[in-house]
Image 1 (spheres, one colour):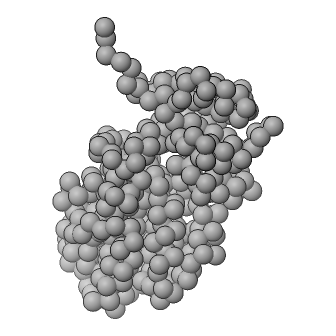
Image 2 (cartoon, rainbow, N blue to C red):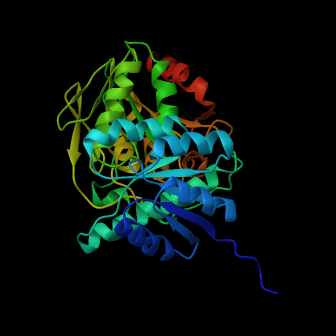
Image 3 (cartoon, rainbow, N blue to C red):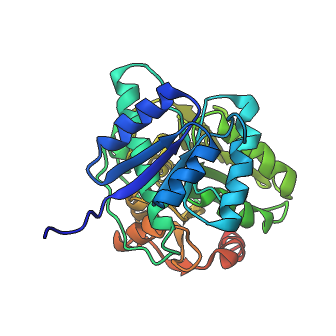
Length: 358
């Protein structure tokens, strides 16, 4: 007898036949994934789950007979499973989609659409990675680190820093990177920060359109001001800038003023925005004036950049395994030698404040 199938089983739930077919083709192209069914609404999905429980469900939010949020709530109270929300690129639906994360969904992906070969390839990478991360999140944080080969490094956006010299200023700046599980982790972190906290720039892997709604949601919950980053926004105390989805965000400096540059570019470490890009730019333009934080997420985005920040004299923090939904990104940063302290989520805010007020 051969070895049992160890592929991750996936159930696709979407009312669009085109999306179901496209998602099936995308997921089936990855040898680590197996599509065990597709359902056009939650009632059919429930019957499929009764026949065979999948490792991961991809779920549309807007469907006939029962909407995705209602189904998600029922699922999480009766038979919790890792769910990845598959949402259309619609700003008016972003609030509903973000609510799904509060209800227990692991991640958001953008529905694949017909387009250029590059777009379809990037969609495949993002969708397959999100499903794999969701499957590992199900293991209740007892996750073996998974090394994901980078499509590009931050070299495609800017060269490595050539010097560790950096003029000291009176202001500190904080760069934060997160992925799977990061939306709720960031909410907890930022709610703990006082209104005079050091300026922050955050990369959270999330599709475009959703980052603006995410920033607005956080702004209403936190003492600090939170907004989606726009090109040339100044990084100042009491402000948190969230990198816009599908755009790289870099920290820059002019004299004593820190600001952000928002730009296009290829996927870096399989992501856009990339934590590696933010961290590399922070190493170059802030050096020892910076604090770097890497949080829950799958893969290795941010590991190289955090090592560069460490080399440039920045203070660096990684979220610990016990409080991470997926320990991949923090663990890779530790293995790259760029982490000063590994802390539980609840202790990171206080440590940022301590380091920023040296």
